[in-house]
Image (tube, rainbow, N blue to C red; front, side, top):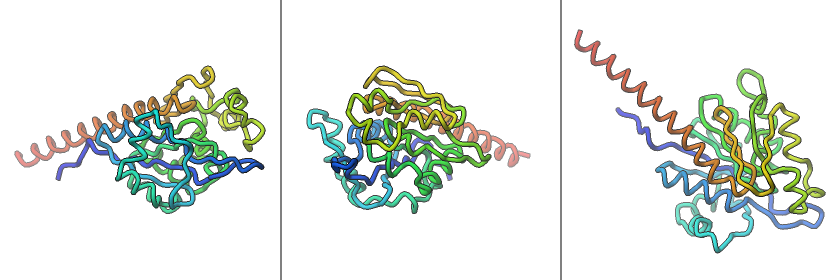
Length: 251
């Protein structure tokens, strides 16, 4: 039986935090950071599934009604069904997925960081040759992820994430539990910062990260390139196996 090469399964993980800070400011996953990658993946024929830290329907941030992709994302029936009752990330089977993409939103600083279930999903997918992507505050889910050889995923990687200057610019620097860029650097990553709110995507082996909402589609496109390489390799291996089988039958 021939394998289906072109269809890959991608897991998008969302925060379950709906309020942050002493003033309980409403928050949720960043809709632009979910919608634009979703469109890239779906337009390429890949299957997109959703999970969140606590499961159920994750809170979302404001929808920009002037952004047709965000509107499409929030109105798509399949997506609405998937978001209505997401799986808890700790019960997700990483073996089912070829890639994982960590959607940003300030809430991830509280529930992505230090979550053992999310760490296992990220580690398992990367260990088996899969692709890991994260944007804006999503890279909080990369902290403390250990690979099978005992090294941290972030060790030696080049990454992008929401910068300290951007936190100050949006007035969240006194609310957040830590500066994400600093934590990434502490764990052995090289953090590359662009100007505030400018697109910035970094690819480091099979890890793709982006600085802010403007970088979300770019992260997905780079993940697509890496998945295309996997597909190409699978096709080459299948062709070689078929050739060897034909030669064996001919003998």
